[in-house]
Length: 326
Image (cartoon, rainbow, N blue to C red; front, side):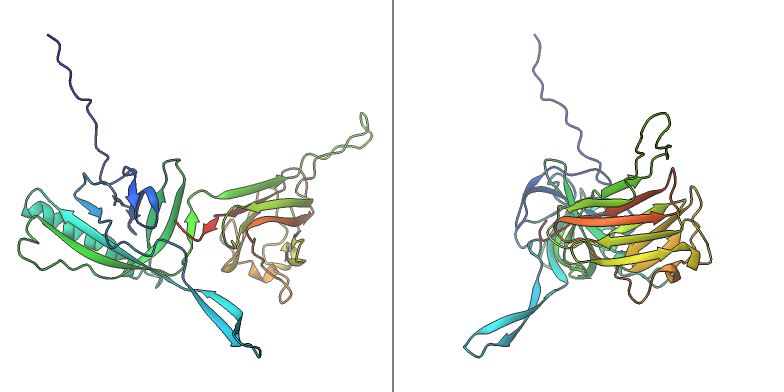
């Protein structure tokens, strides 16, 4: 007589992958993963794992906090003068358990180190943040960089600290906005030039020279990164709605004109210009009039023009949309 058996379900690897989605306060139906500075992925919403976030007490995942500056109005009330986004604090209750005391201890120490590792200094003096990733059922992912602040303490109650315990962790996000895990890339390239009259009237592609519209699907401004592929001698980038612009004159740098296949990358925040070989070319920008402009939410008309361009010359604009909430 045949037996009906339940399907075999392989649980996700606790060190990688995306945990099953659950209902998270301030977020909704989502899967959350913490990625430590070493790159290890810790699923935080897998209730079958040996560690997971407790729904009660989670906070700081909603809209970014703001500081408002206002001035008294002569006729009463105030008038808002300035809005400043503030660092975000995320409160994250976590339960940790193990099959026995040593298994619990291993998990407790490992996850604690995964959080506190964000405070260690690198050789250059910087610190590597952890990343909270919020994945939706449609596959979209938003993330935020965080640093451990405090809270990795056990409850200190009877029966805790043997095979289970919980902690209420506080994480600091210097940038309060959530970032899309998928970059938006706009590519424009010069086509091979053609003789206008041979063999018949022809117009060659010149997408890299001229106007285009860039769409930022996020909630706040983004600061794009530009990568230029030679040949080129001078590059001008203009935001058409504000007339803000900046120029990179390769002939004014120690590198000289950008040759075919060579690249130079312009970061708008922080301001930085590097060749593909790592040379610092920031002196090639037209200071002090250069404005390394941002892209606001929605559509923005932009113009970028390359002097000395020919077949293979290209411009790539890259940015990660930013959002108020997860």
